Length: 229
Image (cartoon, rainbow, N blue to C red; front, side, top):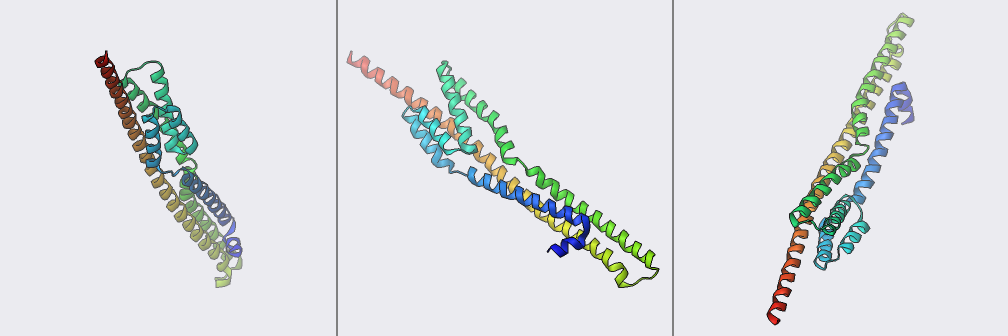
């Protein structure tokens, strides 16, 4: 492998460096997305159970303990709920406030999930250019050798042509790998964003249901007390 890189010249060394960088980004993004992948249904069920018991602090603590984009977004919405209820906002204002808070946080989630993906896109577009540049220099070297030797033989041109072909192949291979990696992570990020949005919508629905049941229980208790009097 080292001999292959040496024969490719300086351009192939740069291409190899690009491939190492792209592999590092791939591994880092894979770890991040793996840690961020939590079961949102179980989380929502636990949050709903806490809301039904009127334990907003317990719901927030569950989200904080879980971590990840989904849990962080739900925690933002729940903290907004605590704040809006504390200042006596109406239910429709609370709903709007929760939605806006989670939407604002969504931009941070996307930035976090897409971090370093531009490196893969850059490698995917830069590697073929470097390969072609190395090819041009290899051909220049080959024709320069012909001019110096004053004779056309395989031995004279083989070094330059070998360098050119090695650069072309290396650039295409690295670009292909980076393109696949970029598309894979872009797809996963899009799925995560949809997952976060769905979890946010579900949270709003469950908060409203919990508030509705709480008001219903309050009215029932008031009616019973009035009948007793």
